[in-house]
Image (cartoon, rainbow, N blue to C red; front, side):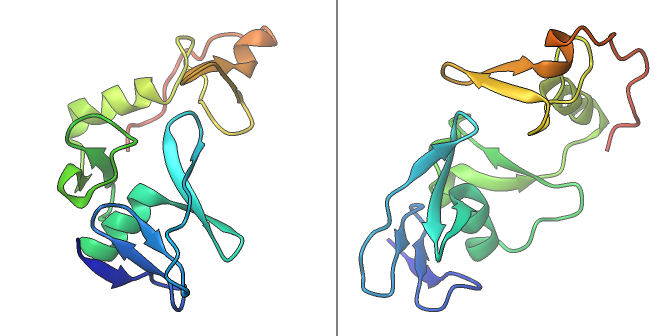
Length: 139
């Protein structure tokens, strides 16, 4: 297991296995946000594990890049499973559909209710808003 300093958090370290270590050497506890994203608290700030691993061990996010889990499991934040992925136009269209409900409304923090394990409910649809007829340009 390889440990590197966590950028912007003096004394904290992150491993290539997705584990965080405090200045006292304690391994930080993870929790789940948005249904499947793993995170930790570092000095009262929420840090998403996959983004910290990628930024620390691979480098900054490339333009248009999205985090990619090779095995499809967003809870597996080991470096060997993560990479920055820049989607082509066909893949970008799929990402738009994944980030929108069946009526084309954006799944945003304000417009999404999480239900069960990983299920999302579009609040615009619940309020009876009409479907989106024209999707914006992709990426």
